[in-house]
Image (cartoon, rainbow, N blue to C red; front, side):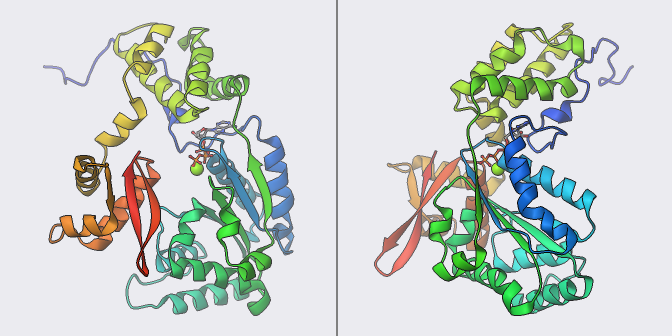
Length: 357
Ligand SMILES: Nc1ncnc2c1ncn2[C@@H]1O[C@H](COP(=O)(O)OP(=O)(O)OP(=O)(O)O)[C@@H](O)[C@H]1O
Ligand SMILES: [Mg+2]
């Protein structure tokens, strides 16, 4: 019997569906030309051994901040071997030690996972910067996370003082949805950083349409999309707060649906069928949660006000998950935008109040 995965009926409508994946970095970024040239202006000096300008990039979700910085780092490393681009998502790298280890590894310094203090890792980073003269450009995405704990705040202080104290050069880029991020930084650090601010504005519906055309051109064959498909997706994304991620997810789902039905192209009906799946993106995310993330969501949703303090979680899962596992899971849920956290004061202590989104 033929293998059940073999099928001679399957038509291919996708040229390359990876172009629609959330972390794909395209070759062109329409409507980000000014932001790109500002970033080039700030960072290019590093390629000739001069001091780059630190940057603060801010804007609403889905305005292309992450993809633009990843694009810039790719271009920069291709252009110059004097510079080392290092991308750090602060939801993923939450502690001072993990951030320093990531920086060290990126600069070619092997750091054992245990038994080395963060001070030691920092010293090795400085030593390699001095010997190689390589200038790291470190992008901190979701940078507001750095301000949540004292050790990571101190790391910012240490990094900001490096050029003056150690006579080495580096560039720092902070990305955040929170336009007041810089106000949360210690005054001394702020004045050493002297960040140039680059705002990323939300796209209007025409811009969304053109961006979607520029991506679908590489994702689908010319014949694969009916002509009203992209405008409909753009209108839908606009209604959802200019959320391009929703549009890419709908296009991917609709393309697969059309292939499954053996259709010759993706039609408006396929798109509508994919839209109408309620909470499309959220459903997909929920299905792929780890057990601890699922448990946390379930616990909070059973509470009267759909909220819980970190301490409630530690107590509830004592013996099942360590506090650290819970902290990591909460950070990942934050990154997936399934919850939001607020720092609240309880007597002298401060704790996180976690609410479902
Ligand atoms: N100008 C553009 N051209 C092509 N694709 C884009 C453009 N802007 C954004 N995108 C795509 O839209 C999606 C969202 O962009 P991105 O993740 O960079 O947003 P963001 O501003 O970092 O959002 P968040 O604040 O939620 O992290 C990604 O798939 C990205 O590739
Ligand atoms: Mg981002």
